[in-house]
Image 1 (cartoon, rainbow over the protein chains, first blue to last red):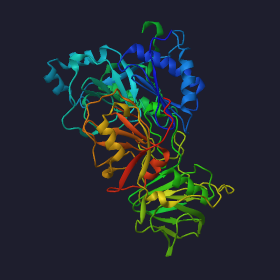
Image 2 (tube, helix red, strand yellow):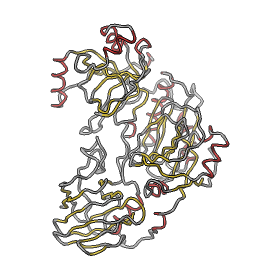
Image 3 (cartoon, chains in turn red, purple):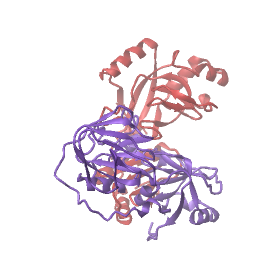
Image 4 (cartoon, chains in turn brown, red):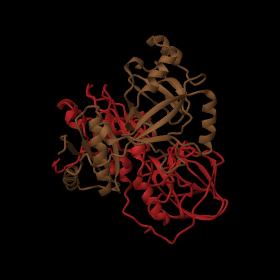
Amino acid sequence: MNAFDLEYRSFGQMAILIEWPPTISELILEDMIRFRLIISEHYSHYEIVPAYNSLTLISRYPIEHSTVIDHLKSLYGKVTQRVAAKRKIWNIPVCYDPPFCMDLEALSASVGLSKQEIIYLHTARPYTVYAIGFLPGFMYLGGLDERIHFPRREKPRLKVPRGSVGIGGQQTGIYPQESPGGWNIIGNSPIKVFNALNDPPCGISVGDQIRFYAINKDMHELFTIQVDAGVFQIKTLELDDQSV
Amino acid sequence: MIKVYNPGLFTTIQDKGRFGLRDKGVPISGAMDEKAADHANAIAGNSVGAAVMEITMTGPVLEFEEGCEFAISGALLSPQLDDQPLQNNIRYKAQPGQRLKFGRLKKGFRAYLAIKGGFDTPLVLGSRSWYYPITPGDHLRKGDVLEVGDSEPDHGSKTSSYAESYLSGEILAVDPGPEYKLLSDLQKEQLHKGIFRVAHENNRMAYQLKEKIYAHDLSILTSATQPGTVQCTPEGKLIILMKDGQTTGGYPRILQLTPEAIARLSQKKEGDTVIFRFQLKKAAY
């Protein structure tokens, strides 16, 4: 019943890597998220790290790879369309106004689109979270409109403020913390996508989707206060399994 | 309570790490040389996983505000309690007001100080390990005051089969990484026979090596990495991820160090040499 031919490999003494064919695809992601849910029911004491076309199971202690792999293969047979993938759409507010939109002017001049057009294109489509890594809460988002692909800055900034929304090559995303960074910054979100004071610190998971919406500076200020007070609720929707 | 008079080069509090959040991009952290940290705890009479102080190359100056018992393991850093020279792997008792300081680095790179009761730094997401931005800072600062947990009945054996020879050992036991099979025979030979030196860029996130292997044009989709994963950049540079290393990466993962090899590498500094030794293993998968 399963559409994909998976590869199972040992990855050191404590981990197993499961790989789908090496392409970026919604179908693969959906299959992976379903398999992850089934695995997590049986391997709750393992960490499961999903990314693009792979799931990595990591134990705290050395494991008997062949036994676990045989079991995983049998579990994959249980992945069907009826397993709810429980994916969510997160609506994230972004202020594209000064002083946040540091590189929007330069981007506009280079790609030959007005600022309004860039904001329109950036907020028009949902983005799929294919991986979370590099920094705590840093999302690898797929689905950026080709017309606003733009190379990274030649000189990375030493400090990019937390919440900055940027474009780097074919990718867009949010800086979850202040950090060095080479992406072109076009706005800022008042949302803390990662907050170490919460458990779990990040509600967004691989497989979810992000939709940006534009807010003005006053709203940004208001939302920042609400976020700091812990009363801001991100609007989320369940992503209909059948529609993918 | 312990007062910090001088923080040393890079001194941090670590336990067994933060397990269960790698899918949100949170590295596991924890003591770089887990073996030495475990040993220090055992001698101090702590339970496994009590938070210890990880001391890198140049040690701190600490003052005990209350009497307490402690032990040091790992690198040989010429510790002294006031004017009394101390040895590693022995339990000592400090009186209120006594100062612990460190001197010349004789062997290894990271020492572990275990205090009876453990360092009682805040538990954040299941761990006391310092890692910025999960915790407010990642290393000790002058003037910091560290709380010590309540003493429990002894857990430790006070003796242990800990051998310090690994501090100077060069051999890193490895398994092939997920992308090892994509390497050329020449590149594999370089890994099997090469002698590599630790580069200037070495810290809790990653150790880079000075010697490169041949360049490649392999590319992979971003995928999970672990402490001990050896990444190979397109120009052939080897980067060994460590305890605070990123949880995903896009470079081929050509080797994977064993936990023992991670402990051993944690005791290496710039210029030290390492060689990879492939483990003999059933190759069922």
